[in-house]
Amino acid sequence: MTEALIFPREVQTADPQATQPVTATASLGWKRRLTRFGVLGLAIGGLGAAAAILPLSDIADAVMALGPAAAVAIAVVGGLLLSVLVPRTAITLACGALLGAATGAATALAAAVLAATATYYAGRWAGRGVLHARAGSRLARLDGWLNRRGLSAVLLVRFLPLAPFGLIGYAYGTTSVCRKRYLLGTTLASIPSAVSYAVIGAAVVKPGEMSPLTLAPALIGFVLTTTIVVRWKRAARREVAAA
Image 1 (cartoon, rainbow, N blue to C red):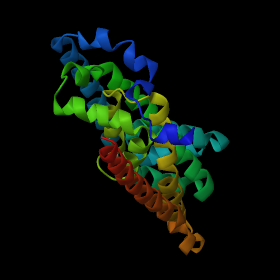
Image 2: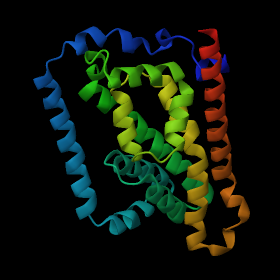
Image 3: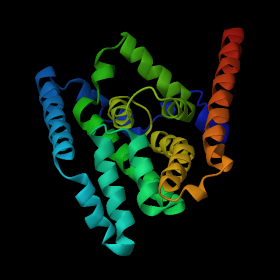
C-alpha cells in the first residue's frame, strides 16, 4: 500500500476533485483566471506589507503573554507569514527561540501545515485547470509527471530548497496532484527541518541545549531525499526496459 502511495502506477489515482472540476475549470475564461490571480496577488501583497510594517517584536511579546494559548497563536501567525512567502527557516528559528525546542518544533510544524493547506487551496481557486487547459505543453507534461510520482514528488520538492515554502503550495494548487498526498508529503518533509531549526533557535536563547544531535533530523531528511532519487532512477530504468 505504501509503495502504491509513493509510486502510483496510474495517473487516475489522483484526487477525485482533480477529475470532477477539470472540465468546468478548463473552460474558465482567461479573464476570470487573471482576475483570480490578481485578487490572490493583492491579498498576498497586502499581508506581506502588513508583516513588514507591523512591529512583529511587540506582537510576539503580546502573544507570549497569552500563556498556554501562545503556541496556537504563534502557529496561526506563522502560517500567515509563510503564506506571504516569509522564509520558513526564520519562522522555525523564531518558534524555537520563543517556545523552546520541543514546543517550538511542534508549533513550527503546525504553522507549516496550516500554510501548506491555505496556499494549496488558494492556488487551486486561482489557477485550477490552467495546466490542463494547456494540453500538450511543457506545463501539462510537468503536471502529469508530478501526478505519476505521487507522494515521492511532494517529498522531494519539499526537501529541496527550490522556492519559498508558500510559493510551492500555490504552485501545487494549480496541479492535479492529490491533496492527500500533497499534505502528507508536506507534513513528513517538514518534520526534520522543524526539529533541527527549532532546536537551533532554542539554543540561541539557551546555548547549553545545543548538541550534535541537533543536526540528526536534517541528516535524516538528506538520507530520505537521496533514497527517493535513487528509487526514481531504478523505477525509470524498469519503465524503459518494459517499454
